Amino acid sequence: MSDVILFDLLAFAAAFLASAVFTPAARDLALRVRLIDYPGPRKVHVAPMPLLGGLAVYLAAVFAVAVFVTDEEWSQMFGLFVASTLVLVVGTLDDRGMLHHQIKLMLVMPFVAIILIGTDMHSEMFHPITAVPGAGLPGMWIDYALSFVWFIGIIAAFSILDHMDGLCAGVAAIAFAFSCSFAAVGGQLLVGTLAAAVLGATLGFLRWNFQPARILLGDGGAMLLGLVAATLGIKLRFPELSPTVSWMVPVLVLIVPIFDTTLVTVSRLRRGLVPFASPGKDHTAHRLVALGMSQGRAVGVLYGIGVLGGVLAWVVALVGAPAGIPVVASAVVTVGAALVWLERAPYQRQRVETGSS
Image 1 (cartoon, rainbow, N blue to C red):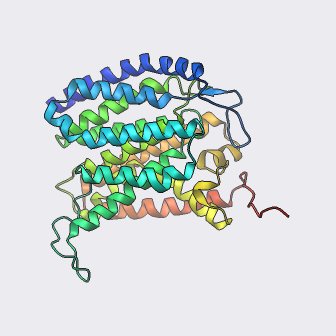
Image 2 (tube, helix red, strand yellow):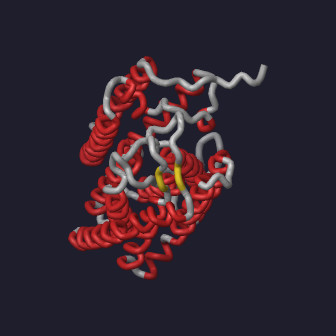
Image 3 (cartoon, rainbow, N blue to C red):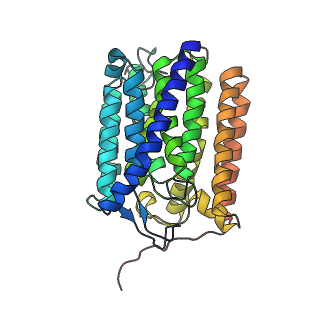
């Protein structure tokens, strides 16, 4: 475990320092090429904001991984490298207004999921089952299907989480920190190095992204963080845990983006809106601000929930089943109650488009 921790610390430091250099350079580049997000009715920033923060995070993380990962280990990460590059490029094109936003959800995210699954980035919970009762298929096909949904869901969740200064990057950093801790204790050197590298890269960027932000992640950066977070959740291994509870560890670590996406999806469907085609100020952070919190406090509350989710994930990992099942059940009940409460609280609702009259 000591070797894993040493490599994690070195990768973290290298990525943090690289990100501290790349972020202001990315900001200058965004201003030069006019890749800027302008204020609007559904946005919280009041001044034009340069994008391309995701490029800085990407370059810093790739730099650290390239330095501290062997050629053999790098070959294992080739699919992740290709997928990360693809979402960054596609997201940047979307920020530039060169792609319809539905292309990301309907084409790019499924394609990225297939790349990752095809390069051995998938769940292994059901692999031991030789034939699923009633279906006759090997259990690995269930793992492939679950992994496909997981990748698309988490990438999409992060892509819509970047709506307030410091929110998406900070929530991602918390998830990366807990993923790194699980990898270190479990002796997963490659997973730990990856988690430490993206953690350092994200924190190096975050000092420029705290309110008032001087640069934004951009859609490419938000999807990049979601992609890496989903991959870490898949690659973490808990051999001592029963599948009954082991699946809850990554879910609890990523509780904030999962909760926020669930909230806006259910809420928009109830109001007759298409969930990922009806942007507005109806996310969790927006609703907390509507209840009287400042933007900084709302983001801080979600940071706290992210930390609590990580702590509960550690509780589940330590106690296992059946003792961990009440923890999971309590979390589910709490999340359900929070969803109902926030949906009933006042917030800014989008109008349903009824067409021209």
